[in-house]
Length: 128
Image 1 (spheres, rainbow, N blue to C red):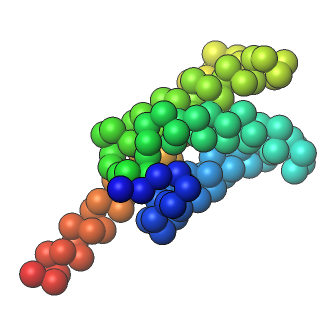
Image 2: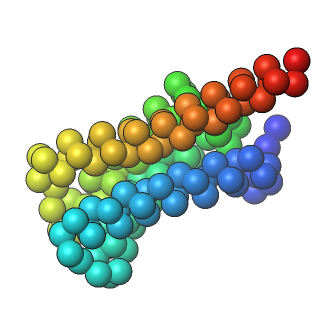
């Protein structure tokens, strides 16, 4: 059994993919408003904090590619805590931004796990 101190390579890769996708989300959003790198980091950090909390609460390192438990749980915590951190840091939380954020991060954080499951199934069938 692994702990956060001795994460297997698959968990580190999954955490890296999650963090990178949250960064992509922030970069796309800020680029659509013509903002610079500082703006991207300002948008990224609350959701990265939410992602971290989500990983810890969901103990995501045990099954990092699991769609229903890990993917959905990490996504929901990322959005909820991310917006909480935005509120306490004085950043905006307009309703349209909440909707777009929930959809995009859901597609990103749950979607890549779905793709990973499909790839594993295809590989397994080819080897059989």
